[in-house]
Length: 595
Image (cartoon, rainbow, N blue to C red):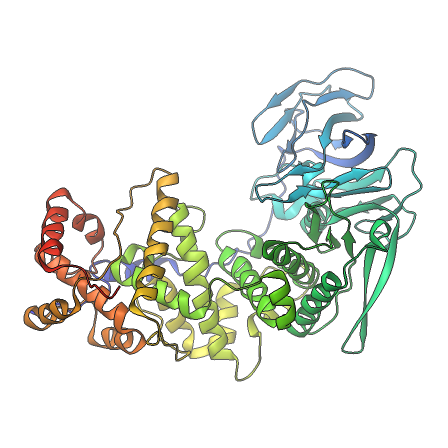
């Protein structure tokens, strides 16, 4: 009996879930009432290099109460700051109790008449990251460079109060002290000036975002005027590399920059500082990127370094031109991360061939390989097909990989396919045209851009329908060996990601049994893995993929399972009994020798 299914028994459940909840998320606009349990205060940051050889900064955070909270407590978010053990005293020298909460410091209770308190700690720059040949910030006799969030702890607010920081923070200031004659390129000040300080009154979430994401550079810098489409952009070059900067590195930066000018439609107005490498001569110095500026080492020794340069420039453009706060949080990460990955990958393709060859740049994943992975995984496991934005933050690592690196790119390409006839890069330009500091309404965005196609794209996102081959992709010219190896490698990667978190995810080795035998079984058993329309889509796209999915249907049939695409079947197929049934069958018919 032929067993046609869409994605198995979970389809109806998903439709009910969508109807009751809605896939596109938007923050409510209910009126806000101040939380009387929170303090109101000013905050001032003072940074001083205290040990240049040891690359140590001393950081003092002065909190000046305007109104104490009932419990007289303050909280600072540790974030990504790797600090020494802090100390805290009130203005009169009285020591203030500190409680390490792991991700935050609890300060207090302070005295009832507290006029100010100073929270102090040290930070070491030039430390390596999780990526080889990268360091976070750096310090020399003639240069200080860091990203705000690696040095400055922020005041802690919960999700309800975070968007309204200006109601609680009366001012925020920053100053660099110590003996130096450096110029500065820091947020909220003229670029390459002698100003080492700034102050903002009633700072908003957007101000704090720029404060912690952007770069802080002090030293000697020379302007580089780069022309693009009749406009001039100003980069700043670390004077230490004035004579040694490689022309090829500058050419790559200009190529990336011109690509983003074309994508965003205008020049970059905030400074980008091109720094020396770390003293080891190989490691790039990462010093932040945000709406107020970016800084990164110019030298690029590897393809990964080129990608980091492109990513830095992309976010310099994006964060200075797109200001929707809710894009940075779940459940809208798919849009923020997805757009970034889309354009960063495309920027590599846009490089002149001689630069690709010089740096060894080869884009590892493209639309075609993603579509292959999408069909293979989704049609075997509906729980993966159903991953959507309302699950962001609760996915296992393997699910996140499939969601962000396979499914989301296809969703974005689908949206662009529907909008490209009227406007290129429509999603990005829609976001750029939003009023300043206004959250994006995702539902309205989708309706505005997609019109009557919105429900269709929502179904693709939810997994209740499969993404058609809008791009006329084909893998028919791929050898069976290449297709099998690509999918086997991805199955291995997913399995490893799940294993790292001790999440049970059955591992299925990817191979193809003797194809003549398989085709005979398909005919005699009337095998099916999806609707006739989806099966035809797969067969037109890749004969090898079609056979692999039919082989999975054969495996289910041998084990007495009616629907090979139903939820839980992947686990059921890997039970000890069913695993043995399949192993015995494979032994009896053999594996395709041509692969």
